[in-house]
Length: 114
Image 1 (tube, helix red, strand yellow):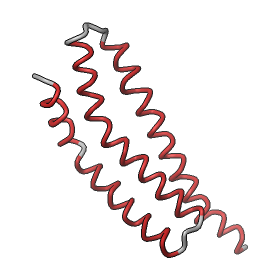
Image 2 (spheres, rainbow, N blue to C red; image 1 turned 90 degrees about the horizontal axis):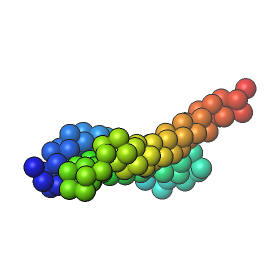
Image 3 (cartoon, rainbow, N blue to C red; image 1 turned 180 degrees about the vertical axis):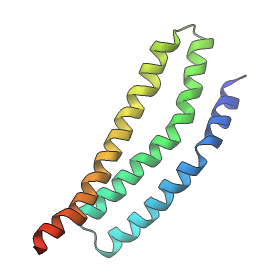
């Protein structure tokens, strides 16, 4: 098994998530063009970060395989540094953007209306 086989097979598993976040990006662009407030921009940023997470994961799994098998590094060290840390940061940033966007859009408007 080589790097490209691992990346390709891992990428196929992430296609549904990529399509879902791509639809979110398209909706976010439409919302920014119509209203363009902070909530819509945060929604677009969150969807973009989550989309990037889905794209990067297959390449990082191939990197883990290459570092473990070709360079002889320990799997725990490589998994922690190459996958967990970057994916945790990207995923958390995207999640925070999405939650804050929904809070701005719905919760804050509801409080202002009351």
